[in-house]
Amino acid sequence: MYGGDEVSAIVIDVGSYSCKAGYAGDDTPKSVFPSVVGSIEQAEDTDEAKPEKEADSASDPKNGSKPMDVDKAKTKRKFYVGQELEFRRDHMEVISPMKDGTVMDWDVVDNIWNHAFRRRLLINPEEHPMLIAEPSINSAQQREKAAELMFEKYKVPALFLAKNAVLTSFASGRATSLVVDSGGGSTVVSAVHDGYVLQKSVATSPIGGEFLTDCMMKSLESKGVVIRPRYSFKKKEVSPGDYKVVDLDFPNTTDSYRLYHMRAIASDIKETVCRVPDTPFDEVAYANVPTTSYELPDGQGYNLSMLHLSRTIEVGAARFKIPDILFNPFLSQEQNKFIASVDAINNNNNNNKAFCPKQVGTIPGIDGFGDSTSIRGLPRMVLESVNRCDVDIRKELLSSILLSGGSSSILQLKDRLEKEVLEESPQNARVKVLASGNSTERRFSVWIGGSILASLGSFQQMWFSKAEMCNSLLSRLQSMYPGIKSSAI
Image (cartoon, helix red, strand yellow):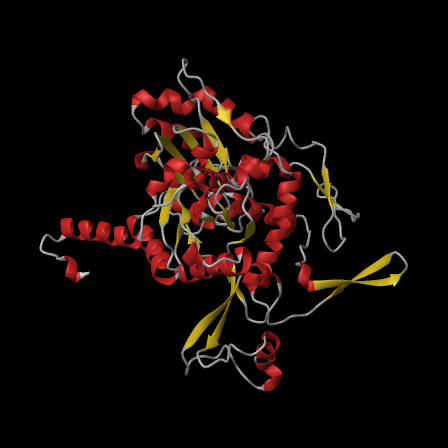
């Protein structure tokens, strides 16, 4: 159907933290932007042709209008994607299309795709084959929905959907590996064998980068540090070189928008100061570790150990304790300052006991995970995944453990994981954890794998068209309902 580099294929990866889009054959994605969007409920008769400022003024309470009071009128959502999300708007909620690693809101994904094509890459999707990266746990229904949108709305000439773990494996030049993908919303461990994900091997955990960010926020709040979103203040010069922070009042700002900007600051603190400890975290052993400085955007500062005012915050033991949660999730329930109701729970449970469903529900960032088996550390997830595979390939998987995702860039994660997996593996096993020395490559490994795959001349026969998709769907329906005919579709 297509040949070589002439296809100008587009590779797009919508993760729980960011969307990556660009041309196949490139080293890095051309566009990267948040995979969350701003959403404002509007009456259907809203004139979207009006300039944005005019629309905002129409929703001003001073004008007597009540755009959020929609009891008597049908509403629709107006989305703000990419850079548009950074500008504060009254009543704008921040929503994510992903939940538990899979897409839950296709309207949001549609708007993210459209933004990537029309506003970032500046392309007509009808002229480019699309390779879409999908979660390793994606269902057939999710794949069909993605294909339907691409063919029916964007009218792409050809499409291919590839599992995240497979693309990460290809990015490292391997057809067989064990992929540990620790992203924003979750961590997924998957075995890839001869270019295919072994579905029975997939192990998931809700603990990812966003969870660690929430832990950092709670740690700072417990020490009296106030994280001010950048939109909520301005610096006023009172004398040459001396500035005063002035609070700005926006009463119609939603909690989700405020939290989004607070998380952005906490995430930067986490990425700047945190590192995985060499050994399991111990409160006493790390009580007097050297602190690391970080200056908040508003210039305020606190010493997290001494609690005295200074120009910067000084992060001590927390910079080791928080990333260690990836290895020992039980640390989460020990943090009285991280979990509001943990005191009551710990009256009846020792800190070294396994999670119960009630405890899981109290941990910030993992609401809805009532199954305690979904909460476990990286070494256990790796061994679980390997043990679900055939004995013949276990040694090969243990010797090719690949790290990917933004959270995999935390310092010393590779060495600690290799050490703990080796301790729990059979004596004759050779454990090797592989990770690019470039944090950008780890973060974009899924996209890079897609870029490599879609640019190969030998891959061009793998694209499928709309007609081929319909035939595949028909075959599946006929197997379920033998009496169905092609005219029924």
